[in-house]
Image 1 (cartoon, rainbow, N blue to C red):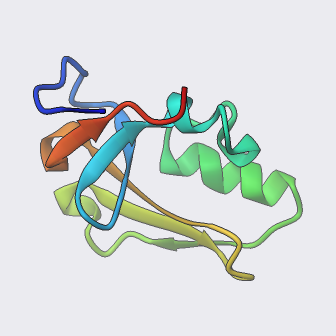
Image 2 (cartoon, helix red, strand yellow):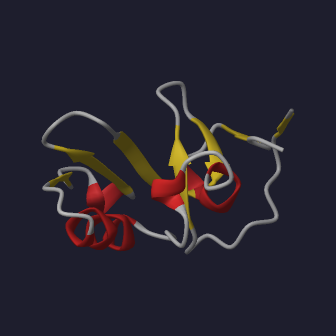
Amino acid sequence: MFYSSPSYADDKWYIMSRYGECVDISKLAKEKDILDNVDSPESLVKKIKNNGGSPVVDSKLSSQGYVNVSTSYGKISLTFTKAKNCKKFIEGPK
């Protein structure tokens, strides 16, 4: 389900799809254990490191509110952004 007018605080991080839709990180955490207790790119980097992984952070567009976090072994690649950059918001998994 899509909804276009978020009631979210602008300082909150969201996960963005390649098409610009965003979902609340806590909703994705229901299906992806790696996102449990993650609320920012920094907290995901810390979690990957704590699990013995090597995070790769691409923050070239951080001044515009985008940060990509991936693992060197390619298991995950997530783009974090702020609400102002989202075209739409999706509910995510139920």
